[in-house]
Amino acid sequence: MEDKMRIWLTGYRGFELNIFKDDDPKSKIIKNVIKQRLINLAENNELVWVITGGQLGIEQLALSASLELKEDYNIKTAMLLPYEGFGSRWHEKNQQVLSNLKNRVDFCKVTTNNKYQGPYQLKAYQQFVLKHTDKALLVYDPEYPGKPSYDYEAVKNHQNYHAYELELIDFYDLQDAADQA
Image (cartoon, rainbow, N blue to C red; front, side, top):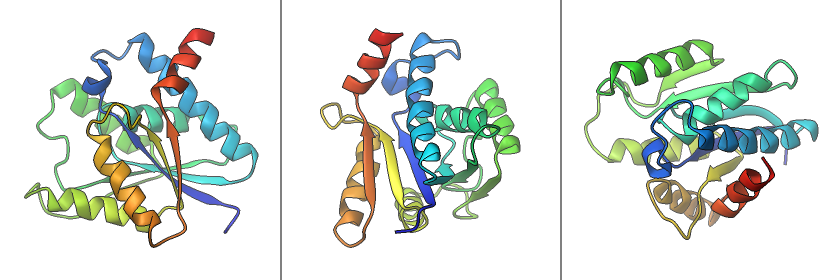
């Protein structure tokens, strides 16, 4: 395996974590846990790209954390969106946050140039990301399924045919971080 890595970082949506405001203390804890995992990889010279989507919740926290580490570590960021017009139905404030992140990342593209047509686009997005990354880092706990269960299952299926790493940040990890804060 190469010693440089492209990581797909995803996980729960904000509403699944009961995070509805930017200044929610849970956001800070989650972001710090993500940063620590990325630092560990970067210090071992394994990390080059953090690749994620633009979903509210873990994906946006992951991009924010990655962007904060760019100056001290050789981390590049990519936001891949599953279809054209992603986020266009969100509240204006959330659209603005997405737009700001798009402008700050190193690379931003959609995986299909069509507006949302159906779930097959999300599956195609998963397959595209799996094909173009070496490892998945999911903020996900199999004991508490939610939207990321689809990504988790896609990774598990991908592992049946490809050498692909999976690392989880589960609720025990988050609780440990909260207890130490």
